[in-house]
Image (cartoon, rainbow, N blue to C red; front, side):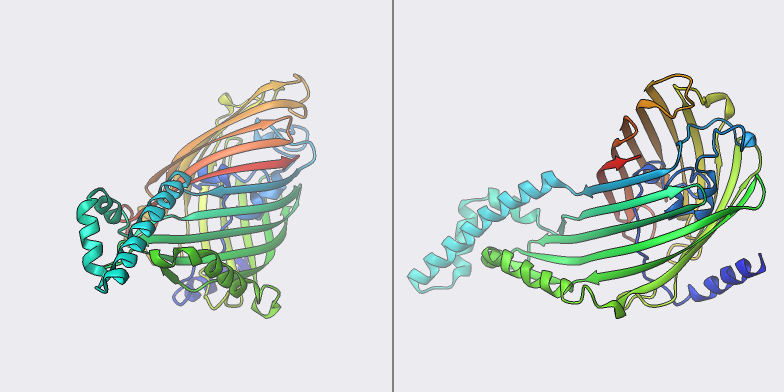
Length: 417
């Protein structure tokens, strides 16, 4: 215990110089309920939020082994999943593509006419815009028009007391700008994080467990690039060049960073438990970035009255977290660290009497608030093998909550048991 507090104290001092964001795994179940999950962790999500939760797998709902933990649907053995997910404003992509092609033709015609007349293309362009005022609205819409996109791929395996995962998180943030003369496209950020991690949990008592794990991570980043509409046809060549920039050092193991996570979970009552975790304690810079550790504490309340552990099982969770406590970016506004949410999972089709080991169809609904922004999600599990999830949440891109909201809509397909 003394060593744990020493690590926490060291991380608190180190965060004064650590500013960059660590690789982030997006759990759609957790994001749906406001990312309040450090004390929920009753399945594979313990790998990412609190390793101590691995002690709950195949124990929750098992009255012979853990009668004090109440009614929860449980897995017979553990969790093994392959996930593929993505997010992005696809409708905005298509409309932007159409607008860019129209403007490219306009600018190309203006340049051709100017070359034929031996005059500057600016006057011809202004005359063309005067003749087509509808294109002025299109130009105005390019005032830093963002087109962010995310992708995630996971391979997960979690059993009682042990879990591990391989996952990739990627994000590209291009935007369009009207410019003074020519509209142009720029890529503000582009990165890919690849992480391998594993950990263990040990229950010292029926109520108290501790988890610890290690991880290795690699981050690839691409510098900002710009391109105007006249060079739109060279987009493929430009992207290929940036792709090679990102992949040339893909297997340069000198750029890999090593880190650790540690967490604790305590069951206060049959319905109420608390958790705390210190995650992303990296011992080396990641692609030149100093990573800030994430200290999160929270609680989960699961009222026994609403939970069932029959074939048509049901579980209901209310959770609240104080997330990323070591971050000093928005500390003057403490509510920006506060996440809370709820979820309800109901088995719709099952084989009654088998303690949820045979369920054909389960539905999960969730909602909450993450740092002041609402979140929501839905998940549908079929034959315990196929799961489809949708979730939405918001990330603050500014200095305080409400300044610059970036809303994320993500879908995910999972296969496994």
